[in-house]
Image 1: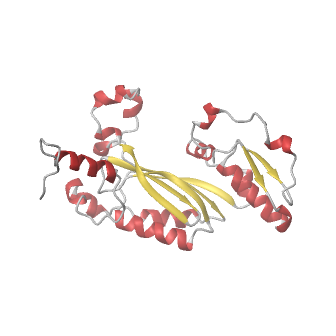
Image 2 (image 1 turned 60 degrees about the vertical axis):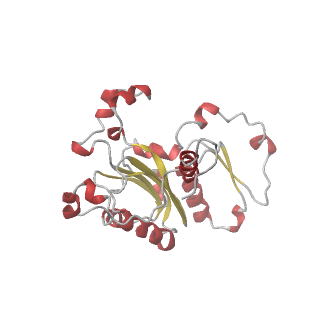
Image 3 (image 1 turned 90 degrees about the vertical axis):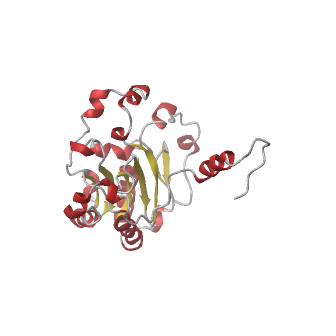
Length: 249
């Protein structure tokens, strides 16, 4: 997703239709990259060596496929070959156990249809931080992505160099900027089916009425987003006595 030149080798081993589909998947994931096709690894060195296409500034920006977040949903060239994408947006938290089970099913049963998905999620058991979800084919991961703006003191917004008014525009009701926003890219994808499966992972109306304190008690199979080593290190420091030896017990 961050490459500036991508080589698709052994293209002679697949059909023309498969070749076009593969090229469109790559272009969807990285619209700005130069895509080259080759057979038996034969390609001009001038195209890949000292191409001067790399830009450190551009490399620091978001991956090209995240442009989907800003684009209108219109039929593109990629969709002609069965490659499509959509952005899943909701203002209701996920039930951790339901989402975890869905992700396990996704990579086992739908990895051929869902090529890539990435975005940030709101788990009802972790209301201070958003999760950074990433899935590619048969592999998925969920890490802590940072704090929701609403969980931070407003004085910290300015220290982050952010515009208060711009931040507040993302707020809706008592939950502020907490939300689901996931880009999903697939081949011959059933968008309605994917949205339904994700919706089934959200809290029900009855669960929403319980409130945040009760949500914290829900089963959460995801790994901790806190650095375990850093946490254990802090504990060890607090257990040391004046002589520098750790106390027992």
